[in-house]
Length: 92
Image 1 (cartoon, one colour):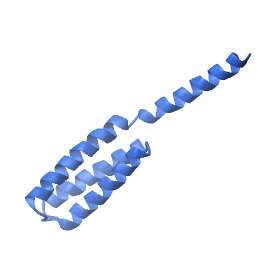
Image 2: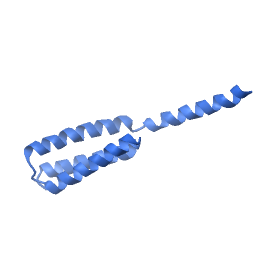
Image 3: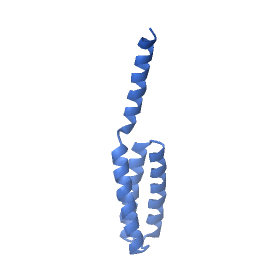
Image 4: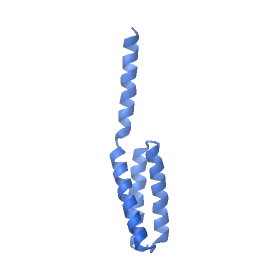
């Protein structure tokens, strides 16, 4: 009788854990690319210091979201950061 109760609960718990991985790879890929682009922008100089600061702030927030498994939010912030990095490199 206990097995009939425990088995569905275990299956439900495992399904819940599997559902959080939808944006995991995208988050990691976007973060890696953004950090590399930010390092490149830093080495080229600070033509667009405001955009660079915005990008750095967004990347910090994205990394925090990744740590707390907020992968969708992490992906959005990393994509925005990459936009600001491009703006920084363009001097805007």
